[in-house]
Structure formats: C-alpha cells, structure tokens
Figure 1: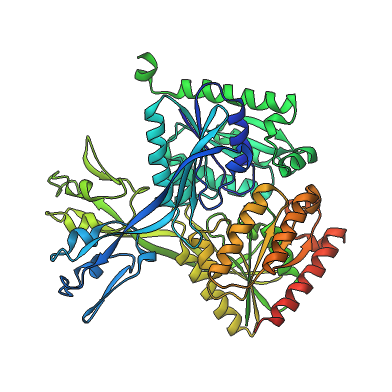
Figure 2: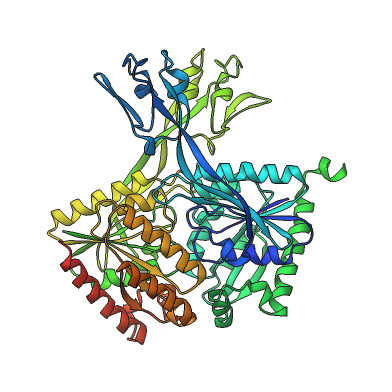
Length: 293
Length: 292
C-alpha cells in the first residue's frame, strides 16, 4: 500500500504526519520525501544514508559537423530549448523538458543525449524504516522529472521486498503535487481549520478528486480557527481520519525537531488510530477481485 | 519603481499574513499575489474583480480514435508515460501529458490533435489597500512560471500607468519554477522563516537560490519564541552571509484572528506583533531605498 500525505497549503503538518505515521507503522515501510524542492522529512527521521545517485534529465547535444541546419528540431520543440539561427544551433538546456523529440526526429542524427543534473536521490534507513528522498538542485526549475525518478527508485525498493510506503508530498495542487500522489492507494489531506487552510483544502480536493483514489482529511491545529472545513468534509462525504489539537506545546516540540507521535501517549494513540483507520479503509476500498484473491 | 517579493522556502511560515500587512502599510503600490497555485492573499484583501483574463499555456495531445491505426509509435516515444493502450485503443492521460508534441510529430496517420490548454484565469482587482493583480490556476494544472511572469508584467504596467512606485508581491513556497519566475527582475526578496528545523533548512535553500540569481535578500523570523536556540542558529547563518534580519516576530494567535475576519493584523487594535510589524515595514523601506 502507498499512502500519500498531501495538503494544498504549505506548513499544515504534512511532514509531521508522515514522520509520526512512520514512527508507529506496523511492518516494513519506506518513508519517502517527494517534496524535492524543500525536503524536510530527514530532519525528523534522522536516517543513516546508505546511497545516493544523481537525478538527470536527457537534453540534446549538437554535433555541428553533422547538422545541416534544417531547423526541424527547433520547429518541434515546444519549450524553446533549441534554436537554429543561420549556421548556428543554440541549445538552452535549462528550458528542456527531456522529451527526446529533437533527438528522435533529427534526420542527420546530429543530436545525441546529454545530461542536465536535476538533483540528488538518496536512500538509507531510520531504525526499522527504510528512507528515500529527492533533493532538487538549487537553481533547477523543474521538480516533476526528479519526482518521477524518485518514484522509480521507490518502485525498485518495493519490488525488492514487500513494503508499504508513505509519501511526504510537495505542497500545492499543481503538477509537482499531482505527480507525487499519482500511484498512491490512499491520499491523506492534511489541513488546518483556518480560512487559508480551508481555501487551499478545497483546491486540493478539486485537484485530487479526479484521480479517483480514496481520500481523507487530517485536521491539524484543531480548535485554532472555525468550522468551515468540517462542514465541507461532511458535505463531500470526506472522512476526517484524525485531529491533532492546537497546542503550543506541540508547536514547541516540533520546533525542537521532535516527532509528534513520540511527544505524549495521547498523541501516540492519535497516530496509532490513524494508522489503523488507513489500513482498514485501504482494505475496504481495494478492488473486489483482489480482496477475494 | 521598486519591487519586493515575500518568499519563505517552507510553507506556512506566515508569508501571506505578513504580505497582507505590508500591503496595508506601504504607500503608492500595486499588490501582486504570485502564488498562482494556492493563492490566499485575496482572503485578506477581499478584492473586487475589475478585469478577468483567461490564461492559456502549452498544449495537450488527444488521439482521434477514428484515425488511429494502433501502431503504438506514440506510446513507445512518450517519455512521460502519458499514452496507454486501453480497451478503447490508445489514449492520452491529460495529467501526465507534458505537451511536447512528439506523438503528434511521429504519428504516421496524423491521428493526434494538439490543443491549446486552458490553465486558469488572472485578474486585476481593486482592494481597500490599492490595486491587486492575482490569478487562479485550475487545480491540477501545470504550475506555470509563465503565469507568474504575466502577473508581474501586469503589476508593473499598472504601477507605471497609475504613477505608483512600488510592487509588493506574495511569493510561493519552494525553490522551483514559480519561485524562480517570481525572483526575476525583483529588487529585494524577503524570506519569512520560523525557528524550526524545517524553517531553517528551507531558508538556507531559498537564500542559496537568491544568491544564485543575484537577488538582494533579507530575513524575518516569525514565531521566534517557539525555539530560541533555533533563532540563534538562523541569526548566525544570516550574519555569516550578511543577510539583514529585519524582525523577530512572536508566535501570536492574532494572525489567525485577523484572517478569520478577512483583515490584516495591522487593522486590528495594536499589539506587540503589529507594532513590531510596522517597524519591520519601515526597515524594508529603508532597505529598498538603499538599493541602487
């Protein structure tokens, strides 16, 4: 089972929930940080890193001796990443999306694959939990290709042994966030009951609903704001799977790098209950033929 | 004309609440919400829309089933896994489609249409603090640096046309495409951070991003009383890099109270938080005046 922890609004507690679920999970687990722009999960799980590799995007390299300056490549490119000016071919690797079209199309085979570094993929272990993260290179604009490569690595890890995984997704509701949750079995939306939290929660609901995955809410800082989010969840039939109270002591513990599930027996119970609900619920939502197999 | 962008790296540090207050305190400005993915500034400013424009960006492939001969060339060339063969033949998954046109170019029977994508809307609005330029992407769409550029351009033109000399922008979290676009041509980036491991880690990355693009950078430490040790670490980092720390603001529920009323904190009866915020804005103005 893959559980994604997403949010819409940033700073609602995705990493807190991911780290806490990892701390109480039963059985083998990979905890994955797909917030590659600002990965934070490692700051709470403190993994021992065991390996890393560069994430790359394939970009074209021009062999000027073969190029006839026909311009087919620049005509195809939708991202203004290659351009032919008279007897000069210019590439703009930072604009390239790595579609490989120009390389496949070039009639003279004058383009070959080169590499743009996207960032780093690291893995390791935090106690019983396996750990995986992506970290975008500073100055790199495109996070989705790195997110896809981290997910490919996750698939390798899951294939090697049967694991559940929990994904700490990027904030927002656009391509990086949608890319991160695409293959998950369950999506948790972490929010806070404030006007900003509520507005962004509705956007998240709109963005993720078309994926047709079971979705539930985790309300963090419960008690801080108003009831709008509760009404919305009731109207949409969205289950509220857990509530974490608004409490300065929790904020201070988080500020000191503590995993919230380890702060008090009550909070641990909250996350154990959340874990059990997710597992029961994923079981119920599973396609029938699989459940009967 | 001057332009300032409020960013943070980490989400939820208080960017938008502070930007709203700065929009209140600043004179002669255009306000601009560059978080086009999950914009929140309008919840504080309650704008009246005066102009609405559709935003189209990029293209999306669609396979015409009647023409498709099921050769599968498109699926084999697609780097984004966006084309799958189902019971109805080959189909493009719009969520995965990158709009690269490779399938269109290689289809031997011209069965792939290539349609302009409607990604959202942008608006010019009036608010009690002055004009606001803002947008809303369709949830799930590509988060577009291009839309950020459109908004910045509009805000600058609006300022020029109205004789205003400042653009105050609310940025997005992260360090990727929309944030990079929001930094382009800006005079000053102010990062709002919090004294938590994530806050400091993300501040360091966003500072590095601003250094990479040579944008002047200053820091506000919000919720500073949550962890004074972490405040000291952030301040050491700032001192080493010569970044001005503009303010230490307390963790104060007044921010949420203002939000619930659709107001900015400086509109509520004065507290330590809002007093400090007024001084912060004065420091930002000094900093902007000092930038050549």
